[in-house]
Amino acid sequence: MRKLIVILVTLMSIAGTASAGQKSHKKLAIQLVRIYEKDIDLSYNIPNEVDNLIKKDPSLKSYRKSLIKFMNKYLNNRQLKGYLAQAFMKEFPENNLREIVRFLSSPAGKLWTKKSSQFDKTVDSIVEAVFSKHKGELIKLIEKE
Image 1: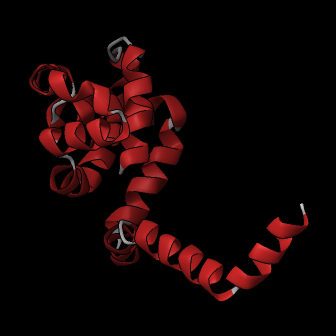
Image 2: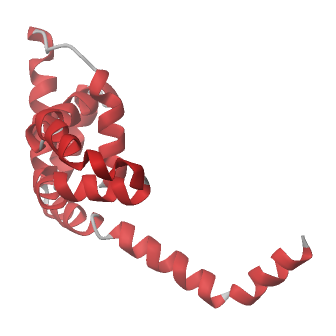
């Protein structure tokens, strides 16, 4: 989800509204956002995001309240969904959005959506396990340099 937020912040400069010809494209983009809506609502919490930002850059600690106020104004869930819909429209032609929405609305697609949010943790676990299993070999490689 954090990667998504970074992408969305980058895409904030995308401007424009849908013309009459883009209404169906926009409607599909909104449908796709609604599919992901639960993930956005459950995982995106502005104070937590600000705290994570402060952990990465402790010099921001004294600006915590201002950062939260700013993000509540410009990066709240509703606005993120709007940016996400714009990004979907930009990245996917209407016919592709239609196929994506159709798949994600199917039983297999719903299962994919439900499980996909767990994959970041799964990948992290796999990487950690591989490093642990082959730690000795890594140390030898580093010592040779």
